[in-house]
Image (cartoon, rainbow, N blue to C red; front, side):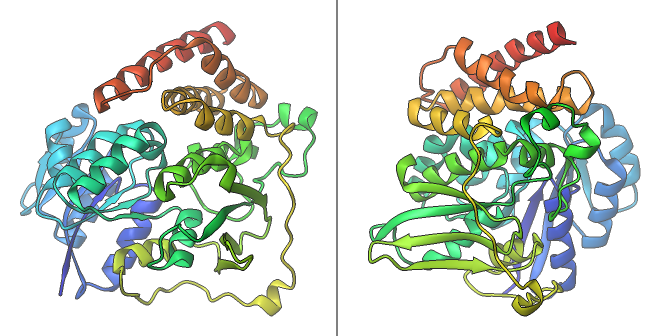
Length: 385
């Protein structure tokens, strides 16, 4: 049976990897909708190749160019929040949520409200509105399929089991490009050095998050929501080879791990074909060639983002919203040369200390707190610059 799919964030790294797999198995998948932020050419090209019926460009200033690029095709060009919601909730039965940042929150919630199976690659949605999102998914009977390699690894290790007999989850972290750098050395690192991840090919924002290890802090919060386990039962271990993608420890002391090469097409394929499997062109893991697997505890002093994320999770549901928004603003400022690498965590901590907010009871309250935090962080970036 052909699976109808929609890809939100089709021109990013996860989106293009999803398209690569889909186009290798046209008999299994039908693409009905694609979205992108600003990349008209890549979105139009993908829509033409796949025969998508709807292509949504988030930036309204790019709409006319999108419309012109799709002239003479059966694909409708669209823009705006309503169009994005339509891409998430329309004719597809499976939705890849790969929009980067908090911008992906509303489309994900629209997909859940429409009862779609959601393959979740947008970690910020779960970080900022995890309780609301999981409650909505349970109420609609929606399956959330984690696409992040770490959470997909846990999902695979658990199989169909609940977490009743799970002692703890162990998220693995590569340590990023600065794993062996001192705090003083890291303070001098440039954006070019920060995005040069040793193992994974990712976008600039998530690459910087890997360098600060904020990505692992965000994944800690994600794991809490996805698997309904408290902070003290979720650990992080640095594994520089990025071969073991995460582990589950059970109450009898045994541990299950999921291993594979550093290729996002593997967890994407797992989500695409779930509950079945599909072939991928990915390089096969050769343990003999790998030779060794190393593990070490993360250094909380050199990577304070880990401490900030765990503290935010253990405080209340408003703090992760502030954490995420302040981090997005700070990372953007760093990538644009307005602040230094060490300033990222420092400014996130300042926002956590100074931006107040009650635990959000609705998506609207999440968005309000997110916007207030961004306004605070933007003002701070202007001062620092």
